[in-house]
Each structure stands twice: as structure tokens, then as C-alpha cells.
Image (cartoon, rainbow, N blue to C red; front, side, top):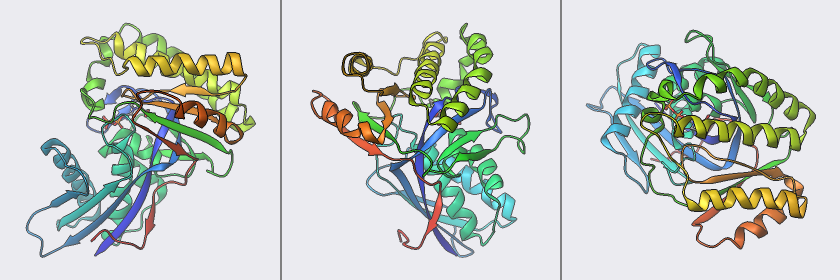
Length: 327
Ligand code: 2P0
């Protein structure tokens, strides 16, 4: 049987950095994100008794051996839950450069999970889908529910799941993703998180997070851009400080990243535009603003020298099945 799903990447307003269980991918903290309309993965999965091996293909790209093994582990999770050992063919396509800190693994494992269970003919609840996607890649669980999503850290596999806080239509936000470098990042997030306990800044961040999560939920509820922007920038900087103080340290920013962060602050101060930045595990910068300020931000971005491209994202529904298969 064959099925195809499309899943969005997501941008975390309050970020996931560090695990309390590496195998189950239980995070050290809850996180909150928004699904992104312009950065998606489409994946077709077919299981068949006649396949001898798993075959994994990425259109317009290459999987490393390690990535291919991760996809096969994702298939194993689906096979285990379904109680069927058939091998699979998987074909996948991204609308954006993978490995550039724009959460390709999130959309990838969300699409794989939703397509995979449908291809198995198994109907799971959204909650259970998020629990299984999480074990492929933590942030993938946030790409399954609609719109603005909370991932509850939990203390067991069953209690660490994602759910929608507000649908994608709730608030007309933008994430203008400025790609300053689309090459593969030097340190994968999985490897990077392994050193988190060596960071002297980790305990402070963990202490502050419960309050930040509450503030973020309130900012979303009230559609308060200033409150959301301030807490989002604070947590972004805090997460990067944690990384930069790990042993060995991890620096994802480059000169252009820092330049854009400075510019965003000046657009707020000098032009009065409520636009805020956040940055994941890579050098690319997400500019978050309300829909009415999109034109201002886009015009500023177009004037930037030495960026590769930019993608305008709206809030998006989560992973869902589609009828057009990739093979
Ligand atoms: C986030 N990141 O919350 C944070 C911000 C990166 C920086 O979630 O090891 O690729 O596969 O569970 O899901 C990236 O983490 O890590 C991530 P694994 P994942 O979006």
C-alpha cells in the first residue's frame, strides 16, 4: 500500500535544546512553535511484501549514510507499531535546503510518520503520531498538529507529545526566513545536544523556561507581538549562549547572522516596526512579524547584500495526507 503526506517545518518560539532520554528523545523542556507554509517536505511511502530491502530516495539531493539509517529507524518504529515487517520504498522532496537549520528533520519525520502509517493502513490518533514522530526527530512532533503547537516535555514516551494551541488561521503572523548559507551545518543537532550538560548556562535557562512558556502562551492568546517577540528573542539568545558555552562550544552564527540581528533591532528602534528575530541550529535568520508589516520587512531583506535567498512563511496546518504520489 502507498500513501503520501506533506508536512511543514516549524519555527520554535521557545526552543528545544537537550534531551533527558536520548533513545526516546524526551526533551529537557517543553517548547512552542509555529508551522511554516513555505518550507515543506513531501514524502511517499510504500510497504510491500515483495520488497527485499528498504529503498530511500531524496529528489534533488542526497542522503548521507547516517541520514538513510535514521529514515530506516523511522520505518522500524512504524513496522513495530503495526506488527508488520514488510520493507518499504520511500521517496521524499523538500522545498528548502536541508541541513541549513531550517528544521528539515522536523518536516521529514513528520511526513514520514503520517505517510508511513497510512501506507500501513493504520489509523492512529494525532497524539500517537506525534509520539512516534518525536522518536525519529524531536522537533518533528511539532510539525503534525495544526498551526501554533506546544510539545509537552513529559516524563515518559506516552506523556511527551505535541498538540495545537491555536489553529494556523488564528493569527496572521509571518516568518520571513533569510537564508544566508544553505550548506549543511557542521554540527548536527543530535550531536550538538549531547554536550548540553557541560554548559554552565543550562541550569539558568531551565529555571527560566516555565515562565517563558507561560508568557508565550499568553502572547499568542492575546496576539501580542511585542510580548511574543521579546520572549522569543530572549530564549533564542539564551539557547545560543548555552550552546556557545558547551564543551566543545558550538557556534552556528556567521557574520551575516549577526548583522541581520543588529538590523532587526534598528528597524524596531528607528522605523517603529515590530519585527523580531529567532535563529535555530544554523546561521539563517527567521524574521517574525505580523502580516501587515510583511512588505516593510521584505523590502528591507531585498536590499541585503550577500544573502542567498528568502522564503515568506505563513502559519500552516500540520502534516496531512495528499493524493499526488511521488512515484
Ligand atoms: C527547536 N532545534 O526547538 C530547536 C532549536 C534546533 C534549535 O529542535 O536530535 O533536529 O533529531 O531530536 O529535532 C532541532 O532538533 O533534534 C531543534 P533531534 P532536532 O526547533
